[in-house]
Length: 200
Image (cartoon, rainbow, N blue to C red; front, side, top):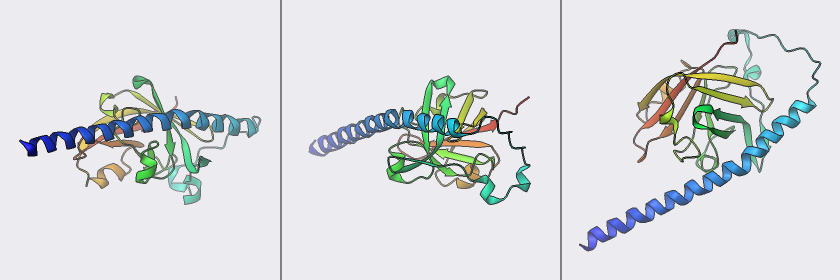
């Protein structure tokens, strides 16, 4: 009887802790998102609007430095842009690198780049992070706006539940954009694969 009460108390404490972390993550996104958008607008204003667009270079001809993404520091952390999920009515800032501290603030880049067509982003399963990824369906749009104001539109082409050890499946570069988050309990990864919508 006492053991059961201890287990129940432990479960309630864990639930309260998770809810507190989710609330802090929600607040962090709400604080950072306007700053990311403001930085993008400022960078656009600084760009010469009369400049001709750079010609698109085939991926195989790009040098490693050409693949790098613009990073802007906000509150001591680097950001590379933001994600928009129209079907979920959700916009999220994206950090340039990941660690467990950063993951409590916003989604993070796990690997890859936009120009490399192999960008992999991860986030906790908080509701205001990637907790609703499983609600996406094939054909839904995912939009990424980088810190230079360049907009890339993707389409969800596949979804999967993977083991935490299935790193190759997430980072192989088979898809232009891969998004993943833990399931509750952390035993699997909800994974969403997207391909870029080519301009007509």
